[in-house]
Length: 382
Image 1 (cartoon, one colour):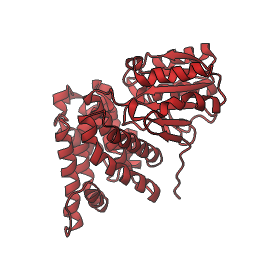
Image 2 (spheres, helix red, strand yellow):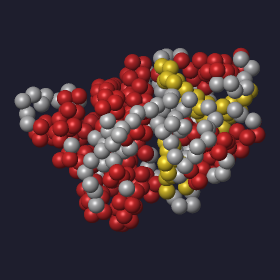
Image 3 (cartoon, one colour):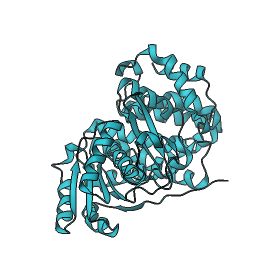
Image 4 (cartoon, helix red, strand yellow):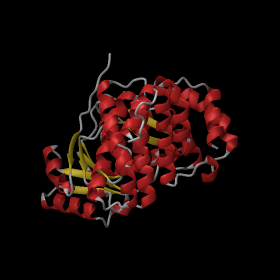
């Protein structure tokens, strides 16, 4: 038995951020907490949102202490601001980190406790505060996904809090103006995150025809827009296509789960303080090759989606073109070819391989992966 569900209302287009106040009023809120990346305070989008809130007499408070891979401590600080302001809705302006912090605050405002209490799947049942998400990176899909990731500062591990029905934002505003100030390397990391979301969701053991359609179109958009977007973030057409593809993947992977790329990068990123998108990009070519024999027909379909000429080729040979496309895409984006080049230490591999097996991504990854398989993949990527 399969299912699909996404509760987020999506508005898209240049300048759509100006509808933020109207949406907050529609949600019944008179006071709102804005959780934003501090680097965006001088941006056109931030000033536009605060201006319309002021014009509609909606009280707002601001929290900007959001770091990469946000911690439980950050969530507690933001929660205190939300409580002091008596906010009844949230606006997240930023990448996945800002949106994830807002999600966590929304959960705690209505469910109480600590965010640690909700690690896992469907660990809370009270609807969080309404959230309006304005993504400023095209990658995480957090605005529509049923998950948020918060780092446990004591265990030095990332906690995944998942609820397909209650954790997505209430409304997502996909505005290409919100991503045009991204540095090129951040655009690349985010774009590769979106690519991996769609790719792993498509080949997941839990995929279904609806998620397949969403992921295939996401990958078609990503394969043709990622390079132009990284080259010029002011390209509004490419930017909107990237935002849409990120959301499409986000709407799918919350249903299907992800695979070994995310499994390995989860621990690589936590141990060596690498961005999530870069960790994914580093692992992708090696995991893609490992999984190829388990899903050759889907790989062959992807090769066509990526524009590879596979006419008349047997499925097995066509599938190889998907791996080659991924390798070339990473090369074009200057993704470092080896883990050692970004400071990863081989001495941690045994421990990471053990953690990967215990994380049980074999629920979703198309090829069963033993601890020895994880270790071998890590060594090949090193």
